[in-house]
Length: 240
Image (cartoon, rainbow, N blue to C red; front, side, top):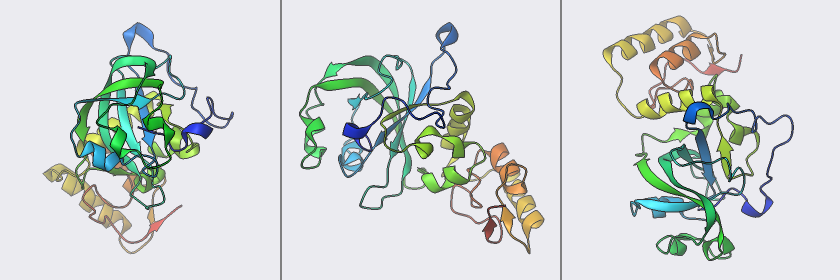
């Protein structure tokens, strides 16, 4: 599977990008990654619909840092077809980076002109853990408004394939991934009503100290002004 732009993907980001600022792998601690794919290069939705058990993924950077057991979130970019960008699947690394061919069952899903489908390239092997349903995709627009996920490295530098996550990003993403698309519990519904009461009649702030952000962090929802099921929490949002 391919990156946003494999041929142009840099090995490291500029100083303003936090790609290298990840926690060291102490005591065998597993890391969390975002592996990004561009639907213009590879029909990722079509391929995942076949429910592959294991599959290779390009490792264009950090190849030596990606280890067996690491958690991976698969991020689909928007592409020219204007798909909803965001996290669409989860996998786990089961084989480290090595020169490998593409999986034969994945080759037909590469778009015309994408040489990665037939080339021997550095890839890791993933085992598929979960595919998001239509209500479970963590959308890019939600991440941009989230007090923690707005700092995801692929939102700062889109032209890459493999992104190591900071600990707070990994924990927040795991929490949102576990709850997006699920019906709220009674306590979460009460919290949502509290937000509505606090914001009724005025703009809804999405700053970290705002009611929306506070409740979103506690109920593991992206603080977009809507819950994971698309239910509005209040009036139109304000960036302040």
